[in-house]
Image (cartoon, rainbow, N blue to C red; front, side, top):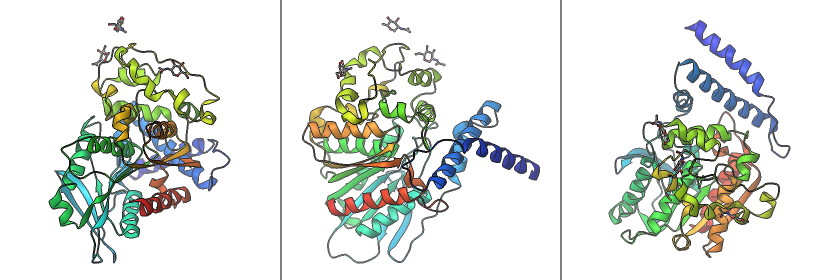
Length: 402
Ligand SMILES: *[C@@H]1O[C@H](CO)[C@@H](O)[C@H](O)[C@H]1NC(C)=O
Ligand SMILES: *[C@@H]1O[C@H](CO)[C@@H](O)[C@H](O)[C@H]1NC(C)=O
Ligand SMILES: *[C@@H]1O[C@H](CO)[C@@H](O)[C@H](O)[C@H]1NC(C)=O
């Protein structure tokens, strides 16, 4: 066993040394730290792929194993009571301020990222973010752990997320936790940003739901899966933390067990013939600012190549960018944070454009030296400044607008 561990460590060191040579854009702060972080991510990813090829374990099992090392217990402190419980059978972590309040409190429902295959509110980074939100805003925070792929594929993640939100929006629950029904936010990062956007669309357009969302905050969100060849996906194909290849692999695991889909997504030929009318919603030649589209050529989508029939591909809950103008008009005040070095950058930019085009209120913050997933590395051992900056921007925006 010791020999095996030594072998693993040796292998890791060799791989790390190979991966440390990846160039990091020159405007990124803490270059050395980011280089190390990126090399570790690539090394783990590479090991996962090797293990899968050799047949030791699946790629996603290996990565999940690493992620689980970072789980925290619900730890209360002098300001906040933290408990793990369940809303509508979905595990949630609750952050309740201890101080007595004269007036009902604000509330934030948080949906974590992790490409639908990984992640939990238990991760140090998310736990820290939600604790800080509760503390700084004197708000109730609910963090939800929706089911994960590939054991649970689409739309299980959306169904769990909306179930938690609907459960929380009931009068008796809001009353129980002392929450003001007119001051509720839904937030999320990355894949969780997509869930937050989809849940908000659903809640605002559902006449049966009495209490509505006051603001939504989407942090480097994923907002569409129909075009896998956007400029940001091309520019950051081999980007920091998440590459186009890995993103497509994980999206494939989330959507279907059929590998034909993953192959087709790589070539951007995964959409069926009858989806042509949807491409106007992700037409980046119209929806992206000039600066971000000028170096790129638009290719019309090639449809019907695989005749892969999967309803999720055309589902607005998977791609909130596919919502109609009238659905977008009902959306609440929206905060969107995008990062320059991120395959998902253009998703965020295009949602901003679409919301602005229908006159919805949207605040866009673009981090010129930002990269994807930084919130997950703001806690020890990395203390990534970029993650802390994003956290501060998000919390201070919420404090002023929720
Ligand atoms: C996208 O917009 C361009 C104009 O910039 C247009 O030529 C093209 O037909 C559009 N494609 C789709 C699928 O909407
Ligand atoms: C997909 O369906 C279309 C129309 O039904 C057909 O013309 C085309 O040959 C099919 N493509 C494949 C790869 O099966
Ligand atoms: C995967 O999907 C393709 C296209 O629809 C189909 O031809 C193929 O048989 C499927 N493979 C499996 C293993 O289901």
